[in-house]
Amino acid sequence: MSALLELHGVSVSYGKRRALEDASLTVGAGEIVALLGANGSGKSTTLRMISGLVRPSRGRIDYEGRDITTWPPDGIVAAGLVHVPEAA
Image 1: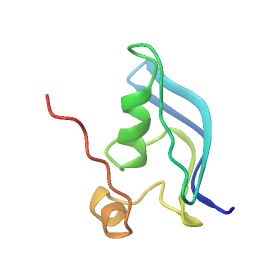
Image 2 (image 1 turned 45 degrees about the horizontal axis):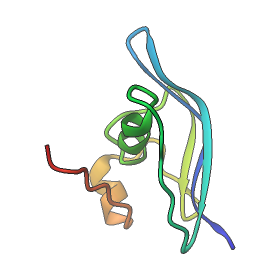
Image 3 (image 1 turned 135 degrees about the vertical axis):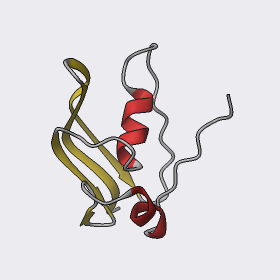
Image 4 (image 1 turned 180 degrees about the vertical axis):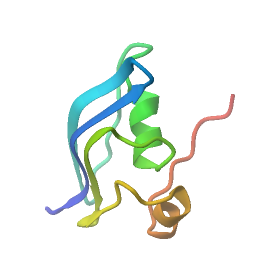
């Protein structure tokens, strides 16, 4: 099975606060993946980063073999990767 989405050593900071450090993840075609963790563990930051709403300070995001790390959110959606957050 080939990788559909890959995070390679990504890190995100909000100012001096580290929200995510050196995270890696591989999602294969047809897989269903859940991010689980306590409040403040980086779940929402990870999803926002994949969606292009937050930029990683390090690392790379690949979708269907293309580096989308610096793509704008609308380009990521146009490529077929969509983030639908739950309603508040």
